[in-house]
Length: 189
Image 1 (cartoon, rainbow, N blue to C red):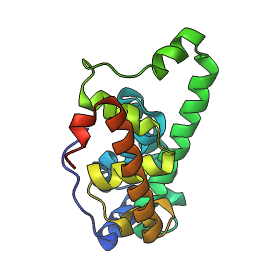
Image 2 (tube, rainbow, N blue to C red):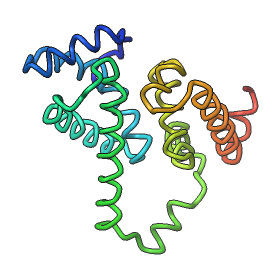
Image 3 (cartoon, rainbow, N blue to C red):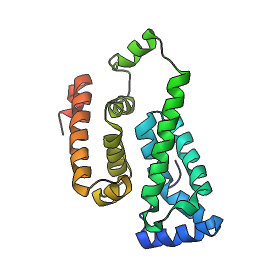
Image 4 (cartoon, one colour):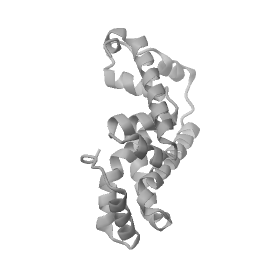
């Protein structure tokens, strides 16, 4: 995805949002640069495929541009944007389900255990899909994007404690799923 994810203070975010609401394209570009990776992480957590997640994240930014004036709490732009991402991702999944009714053979292939040739990344993505969407979002925002539990809570509309609980439970599920496939890789930590 695009560049490094830089922490943004709520007051700086609010200032950029107000400027973007007034039509300042540079302000919206700055917001997009700062939140694109998080948007991608949430989209990936919901749709499960990197290419689809990129499309969903970009689509969500288009929607955000069109609806910028509806962001009533500029300091909470991140949460507002991630809600748009989640909604667009769920809409994408609904559309995909309608057009891609898998055959029994395809369902069996997806359920088949990974072979040794499959890299850790592919196994990790497969394990992530076993998590609920909220747990995937928490894991990706915390572990991939480096967000704090407070930031995750604000963005996802949950408490800091619930964010911690989701992360703890998700890591347990991920360790278990990865251990089933290759115990030697996960027993060290």
